[in-house]
Image (cartoon, rainbow, N blue to C red; front, side):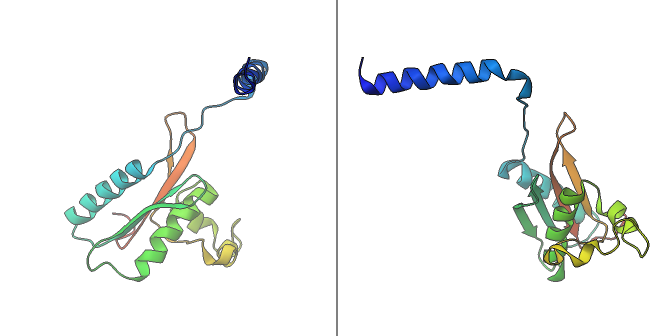
Length: 150
């Protein structure tokens, strides 16, 4: 048997043994991809267009890293950082930014949160976590430029 074939057989055997020994510790992990992120952004832009708002939209993955971003024509330049921050905040706190904002007032359980992480946290409405069908956090969307309740 050649050395290469022996290595392949050994690796496959070890893999079969290792997965057979620990199947209960494995779990399915869902994630957003760029295509899904762009679909979410397109839907948000359609909604913004329908209500005559110019918005910035960001989608972050489950680690809070930016996956996709779009700034509509004439959207506020400050909306860029706000939309990205809202998506990050929703992932980091596993909550919508409305809830995080309410808890960040003096005396609230997250008061002072927005002074940490290099200012990445944003306390304005518009960030919403995204969950898989199995209720696993897979990312978040942040929208800036619309009225808070739109």
